[in-house]
Image (cartoon, rainbow, N blue to C red; front, side):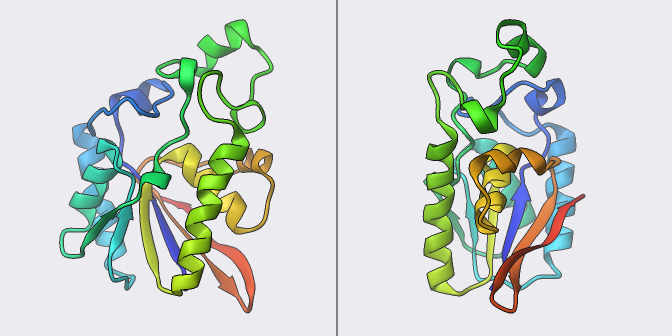
Length: 186
């Protein structure tokens, strides 16, 4: 089995660097084009259905990239809840909290790293039992946590995985060991 991770296409806030969790903003024109490109690349892989975060940017990317397979909404695949940091950029956050790191500190009024890791763990446990190839359309920080948890890393280590909009990554096995087979391909 393998899990194909697809990060949603570009939005206005991904351009500006604003933290976007529950703010439901659409893809830009370029984001829609990235979704079309994702669809072309996904043709190389077999899967029965696509799973997606219910948030507009991920769901729209899924619809564009995956026009022929059933879509399953996955509430646990939403982006990290940034709480009071929603809509803020890193430089804005660092003005008041210069040592802040999302993967260590979480977000005030939002989720902790342990909470996000727990959501990722729930999905991993469910899909490992199903033993099918899975495609998941989701968000940058959540997918980074998902990958870290897939290979058994603590939440803080997810900070080491960079993830671009419109990218594909593949998680799978080498013998019985969970591995990252491909990362951040655009």
